[in-house]
Length: 385
View 1 (spheres, one colour):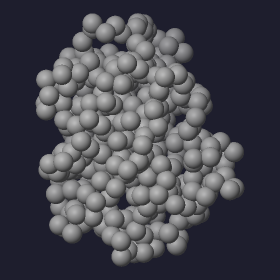
View 2: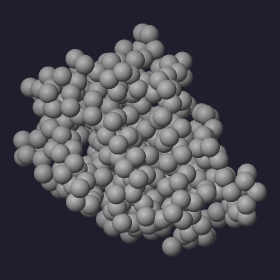
View 3: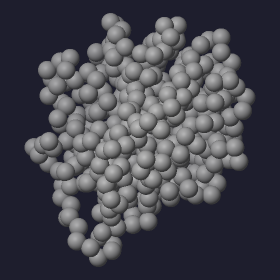
View 4: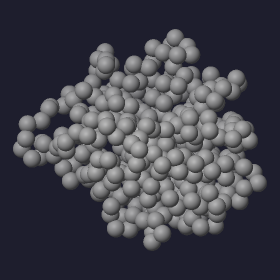
């Protein structure tokens, strides 16, 4: 196995182990520390956040074709993940999670739905019928929630896409159509969407917008001609954003601590990681170049002292433990979105992403005095193949 793949996998499982093993024993609520701003009372949401966001990042590996000495490990974690979903959705479980009270439940039910879309065989088809019924019930419970006029529109839409994917006849086309049309209105140009009527300079184009638009359109795009027409446009915009993301990675693997939710750490690179996983990176980016850049990010972001408690629960921070950067909606469970950087583990071990020699990424070339490709804006009439 490639040494960097081993390093990535080891880090992802280090993050996953406390959550999944606690859920297996139905004691997550007893043992998971809940760090948050005093008075915010995030206990009602933090457990679902931890599970759903963890699975969003793990799902491609759980669904992957892996080499022989990795397969037994993968299968064991697939079983753990299904046990975790069971514990979270069974009303008789000690770890039964909140899918109804408070707006935040819409957010993280959507992340759970997105994980199902990314691993439909391991995280859906192999569930027992009883658990499938519980999951469907949980997804539909969120229909009572009115999404904020922002990236939250995609949460409602991705839940309906998951219901479509699992064969529910009453999936809501309007929630999906509205999200697609509204985000087309919110497109600003050069790969960037506004998160609602006002532009916010943060990483939500990567945390939510591009990845969910792509997962959404790839799931339901063929259902209507106008949705199908949107697919190439959504893909092209997202590729441009991935190219920008690669250029934001400094020579030492750091990146700007700009905007809200920076406690999600390297999850800020979900968009770039997703294109690597789907093997459709912008043509100017070699897979091994992206692997080298993301490895540097993972080492800087998750390797800083204080990132984990003594028993490997994640802490709030950007580089290490920095509780002061936790906004009022952030708690321990929230920060598990960092696992979105690990999406390329869904690529087979023999893919050039893993086998290619280490390469300098754009900023490392630029600041090292090497030749590098100049950047230019992406125009809507351009099409990435």
